[in-house]
Length: 235
Image (cartoon, rainbow, N blue to C red; front, top):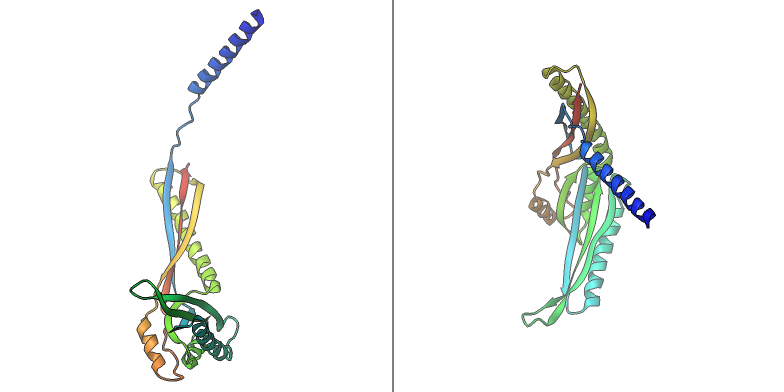
């Protein structure tokens, strides 16, 4: 019985000492830390063209509608593949869907479907010419963007600019406050681009009224922006 009392007392003593130690320990406040950010931006032409071509069919029989869509898509694929070249003109199928149509009474009255073909690559002349020769589909969308190779190269350059600006700003702030330098505590790097395609969608669609005419497209530019942000310890 005496042993039990002593053990409880010892535990209470240790618990009290631990609480006292925790109360006495205070994490030192962080001082002379500055949060800052810098950006690097490079404007380059968009070099990747994507043209989406599609068609819609409807009828009372689902198999018939599906067959019409398949025939139109097969013909378009055959024409596009004549000038396809890896990286310059890549051809792939897009959305292919078939769904029922309903009347006002909520009952099915037929079927409607859509088939899509995507022409994409860096050879703008080749892609626009191929799109103009396809007669079973019409242009539904035209867009420009950066190829993976172009994006990687430009982001690397913009990142270098952002880092140098970050370092220069950190040095300026350090000297302005009377410190001799700084050390890097943490850093984050993010990248994005903002671009546009100057040719409107309707212009591309109207071009299809002339048989075998190349779809008129023109690449725009995009600004690749890299932001470097973080904190430095002044010393």
